[in-house]
Every structure is written in C-alpha cells, then in structure tokens.
Image 1: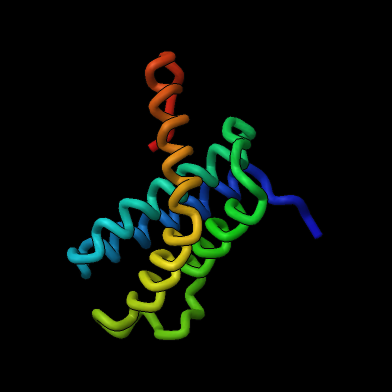
Image 2: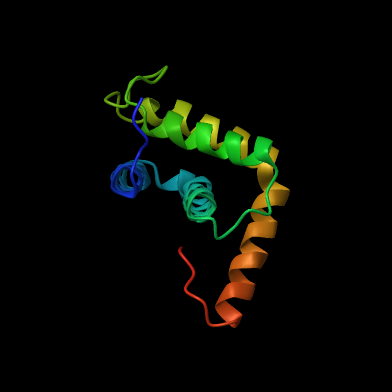
Length: 123
C-alpha cells in the first residue's frame, strides 16, 4: 500500500472544496452547516501538516470520516438527485458537528491566536 503524498491530499481537498461549493449553490439554507464543514476541512489540513495537534484522536477521526463521506460518490442518496441528493451529506456533517463542536471552537480559537501572532492561517 503506497503512502499518500501531499499532492494526493491537495487533490482530495480540492475535490471537497468543489463539492462544498456545488452544495452551497444548490441548497443555500444549508450554508451554515457547510461553512462549519469548511472549518472542519481546515482543521484536518492543519492536523495533517502537524500545525494543529490539540485535538483528541476520536474527534479528528470523526471529522475525517464525515469529510470522506461527503467526498465519496457512493452515497446513501446519490448526489445526482437534485435537492435530496445532498441531504445525507448534510446529515452526516451536521451529526459530526454536534459531536465535535467543542473541538471546533477550540480550533477556531487557535486559528485566531495564530492570526494575531502573524502566522499564516488556512481558512
């Protein structure tokens, strides 16, 4: 089994970003959930880079699995079904947000501290 490279992670991240944009365009009322999903993605990226490790393993695992579910084209409800196709994605993200809300808040505090210190912060 080969080890994924940063290029592989960047490609996956680009796919997730594009998918999130598609969802936002089709279902505006879910925008807040997907704004939080962007923060989740940023947290995973910072974790992978080693910049942010102040998160329990279960929480980063839950966030990673939720984002992988959104990226995976083999959904419970296919995304080609306009409207309903993204409901399962939104449900998974919303459930994960409830699980890791405290960790997400801690991450955002860390991001703010990094910005105040003049360090580059991924958003």
